[in-house]
Amino acid sequence: MANKVAELSQGPEVRTSSPWTDMPEDQKQPGTAGKAAAGAKGEKRPVVCVFCGASAGNTPAHLEGARRLAFILHNHGISLVYGGGTVGLMGELARSLVALSGPDAVHGIIPAALVKYEQGSDPNQSDIKKLIDEEIYGRTTVVKDMHTRKHMMAKEVIEGGPGGGFVALSGGYGTLEELMEVTTWNQLGIHNKPVVVFNVEGYYDGLMLWVKGAVEKGFISDKNQGILVEAKTAEEVYQRLLDYKNSEGRFKLEWDSQ
Image (cartoon, rainbow, N blue to C red; front, side, top):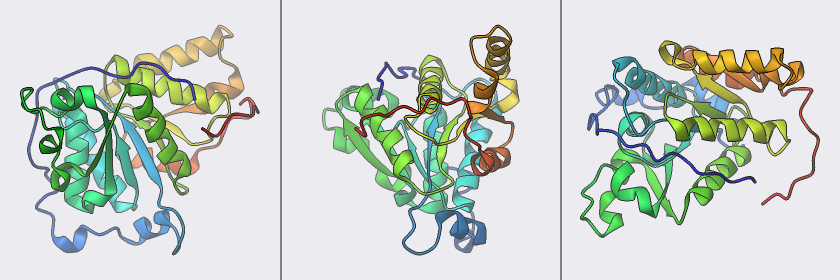
């Protein structure tokens, strides 16, 4: 797979708990929809990779979007793989889902160089194992570089069950780069998973207009315009994942499975 540089944004740590933490225990198990999404016995559980910022943004809607998305993933029995940060939207999403579904539902993958920063910990702490709290943020894998992080995240989605895919919450340069990379990978036939933009408060309006303009100017084909789909609520994100149709304009290329 192609490799590029991922997000390095930082932001203030927010919340050490989720509004879902106080939910009754009988609601912290996926319901009928969740069991159906996870599939019959022996079928792989769907995995969603969420790209989002290590910052929280300056309006509460972005944090609320992360919390709501966590609730939807929980309710439909979907696992999360993400960039492993504990600050900003990354941290809010992971904390909220762990509080609902437990640590096994979340896998964070983070380069060693970013552990002290994207995990909002003491930069003088030398033992990275002490910076990771599985009971709050789920399982964490520390990798050597950005490329390994993105490859592993994509691999988990591709190998997961039906109903998985890639979702972008609000974020900065790196979030956009990661989103565009998996969109391109779909176009090139590297994967056939859905790619969904969770457009909170119109944050990605400019991006969606750019796609439309690129189609009008002949740089993206009409058939490929739908590779990247938009959702304005967490509920719509789930529906887009279910209803996603791969573009007829995708390249039918042979790629090394690695």
